[in-house]
Length: 256
Image 1: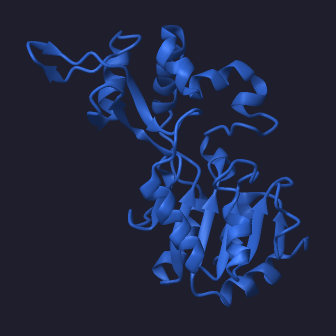
Image 2: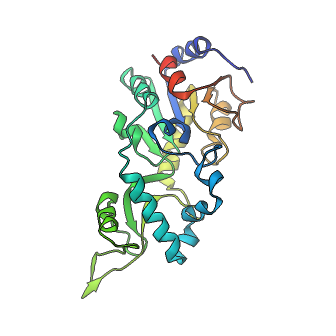
Image 3: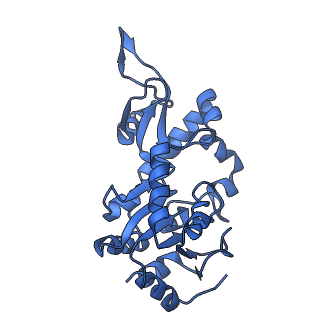
């Protein structure tokens, strides 16, 4: 592991022409979105909160769904905005050197920052849309949250079906524990990393596969790796440069 200066890491960035950025929850905490596994993370502070992100519990337990909807409603009223780090990464796309953004986050802030949708690969899905588990109908999350705000604790699908409605369980289009990733999105992530000459991992503990596995995969395909995080990660020993500190300070300085 090489604990690098910003100047050293920037030299590596400047020499790259096909950059892929891998982001985790740490890039969004400054926007007011808590992470999961950090010292103040949702699951660290409340281990039971992980049940909301487990498919079997969500489908089988109405109380879990009610809790999930109330949390989504509370988060929706916070009006989170992209951070300085999100906005800084858009500069790489404008320079024509960004091959892809692989994000473990479901908050949509990379798109809000100005990235082209074709560049952003949301490997864990998006919290901005909602899907019926029964009929598969999708709709904006805001439409369902309006129903929750009006008093529906556990809204179900209202798509017409026969003489009634579907009435299937609604859930965010995020990947929950116990289900597979979207194979098309996963393949797009693999393709981008396979072709890159530099992978920059930002704000991730690199503890969750398959996203974390993209680091050794990139190295195996000849790419260099820079890790930017405020704490140790699982793959610091593999990185060519490690920047440790405030992500909102380091990333804009790195890609200026």
